[in-house]
Length: 286
Image (tube, rainbow, N blue to C red; front, side, top):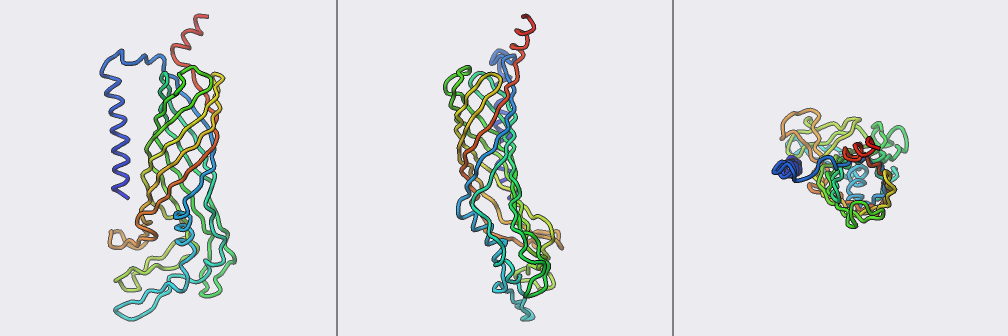
């Protein structure tokens, strides 16, 4: 996880430094009075790949009484959980994403930060207590949020009212999951007394992202309406659980070590373009 975070953060920093250095190379490289800021609000339908859907459902619901841990020292047997997960409603392979964009336009070039989040996906507990062991059950849930730094280009010119805008960008995404019960997770090679108890809380893992999209936009200045579609590459690490310890050896890793959380999507957004300094000066003269 740290490696992916470092790569994504370094990429973003290098892009930022490159833009600043180029802009400062010559005072007349661009006319800063012609830069226009903008904000957008949008939503989209996001389809998960089947691998990620199965990953979520397996991680949260398939920890049943068939999953056992035998202490090699004492011979004691521990059950990771009971069979309650079989009674939960499984998660689907799509969700609706919500987006807030903040950016700037210079002639045909656009750059923006896309802050994305989603409604929490919830599977209600089927009953208050487990029939097998008496563990209290919780709602199972998951959600994610993050951002992408995007770079786009208006193919048909700056002022044309109908435009196509391809864009690419990099960013970060945080996955959060809530397990169904406060059961203990044994640590392989350690006594059962060192098992980590899952709490009534969310556990998280961070991922670097690469995003690509194409928007069809209609503009009646200063308002634009667009429809878009694209593909977002996400590679999550295992979820690390450590409630009783503070060192790496005390972590328990849950899930696949490198899960493919990619999504493809399509949606719509509304954009408000602010006046540039040049446009404001022109209006003041009228």
